[in-house]
Length: 494
Image (cartoon, rainbow, N blue to C red; front, side):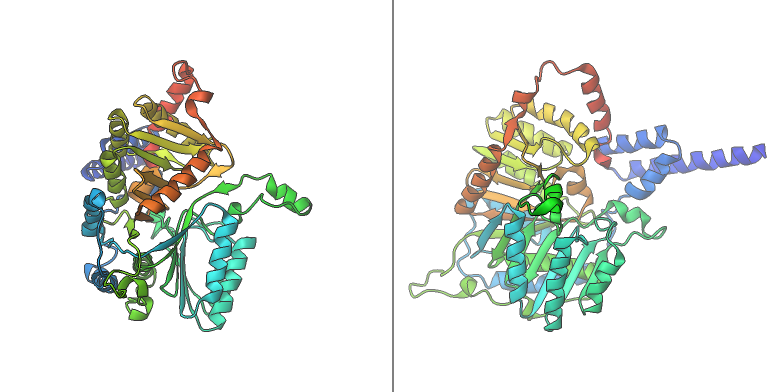
């Protein structure tokens, strides 16, 4: 019997050593490599399980062929080529070309954009546009809850399916783990095509639990697009109204503050492409018909004096994923920080920046750029909150201003810079969004839009407090600093 113990121990050691070699050969960031090394060494057995679930690197894995990707991109490229009088802003031309060359995120002009910072406004607009749909409705959401709001959206989609409108829905299998299958089956029975993204079925896809579709996209008839940070869940509308005891009980729960966009114009082509790539991923169906890319009249028509009849509000829909060659959204944030002349204002619910983003942020602040980061006063994940504190104090020492949002949980992901550009989407400033998740952001180059987004930020400042006003940076308890530094080691895994 004793030989069996030694045999099992030998097999375990070989497994650990083999896993450590695999981690080293992935050539990840040293901090992330060290984090996994520590987990494998100091968490016997558990470390192997954690790596199996969360540690495997898929960036070099081809989950969609280049030929299929080219076919899905071809239609949006044709629409891009047909644009008249497209003028790229000189101060952001390099950033635009970066996204276009490595992400096929093409810049489209003539966009009209509505900003939603309130769940009531956003979901009212979404339901209104769903009701008007004539040809197709495409929804891609990390969370699609089986709650009052989720069922209201589902009912609206079912009604449109009965009217022979094509309805396609993608939900993330991990984001919807607590949603019963019957909720989605009800939609399927009504004729809606519904797919879970990368289902986690033990043991075949267990290693994929770490790579989730965190995007929040919607396209109506190819003419209206939604993108931002709001999932389909009542947490975004909870607490606004009180009607009876049940509503009063719900109003005591934390209201989630978020930012979402409604886009009309060429930018919708980018959202459509992002959805159809995801649809091919889950359904293996190539959808490239022109009807999904209807002509945007303002993008092509010329007025009598041969000038564009639209506007030059330029939008790029940039996606990133663990299977793309480069971390596109992270690279965009770095370039914005290093190119900024006056300011960069950021909102993120989770602040666990990669080393390159951290360096860019400190460099910008040290060169005199007004860098501000807004995070929640309290997050929905205590471990993440502890880990983020060490990063917070590191950037504060370089001159970055940290605001703590107090009016609910700020789940918003936005950036605005120099009154000339802004971005809104699903990507947090953390390892998971920049490296592991499938994310989508709208990058917008327009002074008017940047000023509107700046106003959103400054309104949130009114509901926030500066970190320096609530915490003495020079006299923080040693044990607290030690604990934050220890938890920071796990940042790449959170």
